[in-house]
Every structure is written in C-alpha cells, then in structure tokens.
Length: 399
Ligand SMILES: Cc1ncc(COP(=O)(O)O)c(C=O)c1O
Image (cartoon, rainbow, N blue to C red; front, side):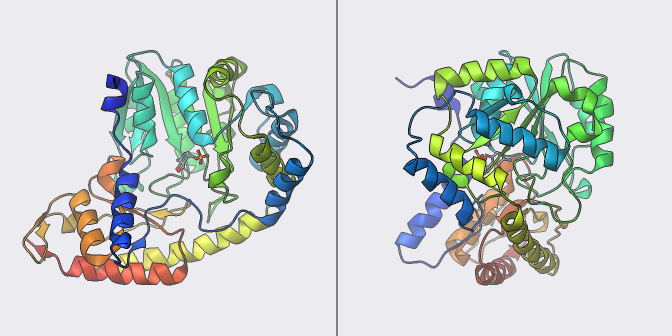
C-alpha cells in the first residue's frame, strides 16, 4: 500500500529527538530543549492585527493561486527596499512557507536522475525534497575551518554533466554561517562557467544577521538572475512559523511552472496569513531588530561558553539562531556505564537521556563532527543548558 518513495523517505532527525525529549518530559524528567528551529518570541502585535482585520473584513475565500496582488506588490517593494533587487508581482509565488517554495522549485527544476549539489552541513529537508523530485542529492562536505561555507574549488569539483541545481542557504541552518560578498563573487565565477546549473538561494534567515548586512547572490551576480530561485518567507524574521507563509521570486518561466504545481497541490496560502504578511512588510522593522539584538546577545554567550570547554570549538556564526560546535574530540569515548559514544547521534542521545539536554546531532545534517544547538530559548534556559552540556561531556570517559 505504501510507495517506495514514501518508504525510502527518512523521518526528520529533529523530530526524533524532540519526540524522545517529550517522552522523557512526560516521565517527569527535567529536559531543556535546544533542538527547535523557531524563534521563541510571539508574532508582533501589528502583524496579528492585520490578520484580525482580514478576518473581520470577510477575507475568507481563496485568493489568487500565486497570492494576493497586494502581498505580491509588497514583496516586490520589500525586495527593492531591503535587497536592492527588482522583481515584478508576476515573478512572485506566495506559498505555505519557504519549505513549500523550495520543494516546488525542485519539482519544477529537475528531471529524474538530475543532480542537486547540497553543501553539508545542510538543512535536513534539501536531500529529502530532492529525492522526492526523483533527483540525486550530492552533498558536498565543507570544513569547520571555512565556517562550513562551500568553497569555489569544492563547487567546481562537484559539478558534473548531470548537475542542474546548487542549493545555497545563507544565513545557514544548521551552522549560522553567512556567505560574504567575496565568497559569493567567487562562487558566481564558477557558476558562470556552467550555464546549465540553476541556484536555489534560501534566504529565510535574512533578517537575523548580526555583524554585516545580509547579502544575496544576486547582489553580486545580477547576470545570474535568470537562473536563481530566491526563496524567503516570514517564519524566522517575524516569528511567524505557525502562519505558514513564504515565497519564491524568480524568472517568469520558473514562476509559471511552480504556480502550475502549486495550483494542483495546495493552491494559495491562507488568506488570513497573507494579510498578516502584508502587515509585516508594510510596517517598520523595529520588532525584527529587537529580536535580532536579543539573538545576538545569546549567540555571544553561547560561543563564549562553548569555546571555554576543553575539546569543543565553535566559530561565531554571522546569523540565524544556531551554533554548530565541533565536538569530534568526544566521539571516541564511553559513558560512565561503559556504553560507547562514537557518533554525534550517540552523544546527543546520551546528553538527552543522562543530562536532560535535547540537541540535534550533526549526523542529521551530513556533518558527523558537530551538533546543532538552537539558542532561540530564554537566557536562563541557555545558562542551564550550558551547565548540563559541560557536565555531560566531563562525565564521558575518553578512550
Ligand atoms: C533553511 C531553511 N529553509 C526553509 C525553512 C522553512 O521555513 P518555512 O517555515 O517558511 O517553511 C526552514 C525552517 O526551518 C529553514 O531552516
């Protein structure tokens, strides 16, 4: 009854850990979870008000498949205001979240057997979505020393005759790394040599950038515009994960293909969420900046604490709300009861079961030497989480 497509799909590792964490909580154990991928703030009031007004105004019906003209106009205005990019409303498809935009873009861009280059560590959904579209994910392992950013050389080596798409995510989930102007210029130089390779540029964490301004591939390589699917949304910057609203901006041909797929699969996102998105893009960024300042304080705390631990190294990520420390020195160890800890999954299960701390193993993201900690949590919880982490690691017996 179940297709091989569904059977082959791996359940999300993040959900596995959060599931086990909930089980332990139900047993009465104290668990601190740094495994979630969502801001710990409520959606700003002015955005909620936009949605409430839409409900009261009777905006209850289906909207146009690609989103309301008002929201698509506002997205174009935003792309000009914040990103200095020119798009027209017929180049936008609003979706039920950036996740849907990435998935539908892949469906629209690749044929069975086409290769998709995915720098690792990667967001867990990229390889899964590629497989669902019958493509072949080609993870390219990047290095800690490069803050896990894909180098031009790594890109060049990975490209084959079958490569159709490169997925770039900046700021990155799970590492928080951001590509600089120079990084992007160098990658663009390689991409120019390979006109058959399109790019999915996932910029969902755009507003959570701490040190420099967010920079998009298209800012440094406007000539690639016909090959870039720019993905963004409201979940992270405006703390709107539950509203399910994202979008694709891209060349008209791609937009038409994605719109066709969307019209058969889901239709437009909720009319109420679209009204909320319109309010978000019509207002100021004050709330976004407040949340960002708070994330920055927490990032600094986490990085300082992690680098204080013997055998743990962590670079200071430029964005998002994750740190991704290297914990490889603890991977050849045993628990006090003699159970081997050989992988980041072993380590995370040990920390969850014995220290009451839920983290996501690097294995899930294609990087066995690391683990992901989300610092979208209250400062008190972060302090306690770091105590538990230190204590958990110091109880391991290194072989
Ligand atoms: C890199 C990345 N892209 C896309 C998404 C999906 O965002 P949305 O909530 O808009 O579907 C996430 C959410 O975790 C993400 O981390």
